[in-house]
Image (cartoon, rainbow, N blue to C red; front, side):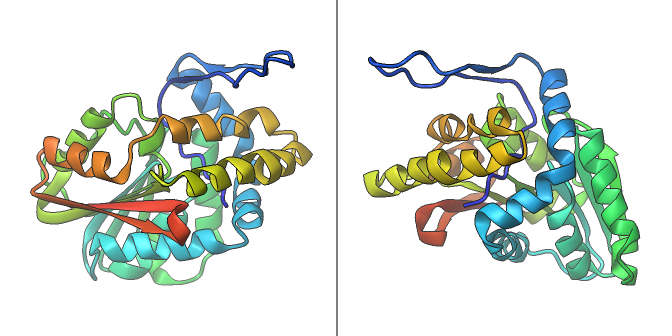
Length: 261
């Protein structure tokens, strides 16, 4: 399971309390500036942790996300909360050298890693990517500008999810799709138990080796505070999308929302 963060806005996370133990340390992020600092700090090891914690499976999930976006050769596409650029690179392979990919994130360090990775890639399609520092709930783009949008592990922790969805709707061309990958908030107790167990016994201990336990232990609580697949579909329709479908993948641990304008 990948500890894929992709956070773009404020949240407050408090550890659960045990009757026989002291309160867990609280991870409080009061504003986007503090969250930006958090992501700047984890940027150097972010990709290594994703590979290690997911056993490489996150690459499969991201390929599915890009496929569901409907991006094609020559398209102008957007990757929100792009982090170190995985989805943006996959999108560039879809749109080719005649297309355009914009990767937006609010972490300058993540964007620096993405840009560094781009400079090491030889294929001409990767030169069509531009990195932009910005906010997913206040996009600096014109209406109906993009042929497809992807978002990986970002919507879960956007405080105003409806506003974020409305912004994606606004900048998409009619008939185009947004494809949003994230952890799945399952209605199945077994899946929820396994998610919690993996985070407590795998994700956080591994992150501790990198000195990032505090940054990763919030993950379980952010999933619990997220929307179910059905709720995500309702959110997309409320934002104006004409259709929406949420797919559970990887045994229900992950989910992908596909919505069409």
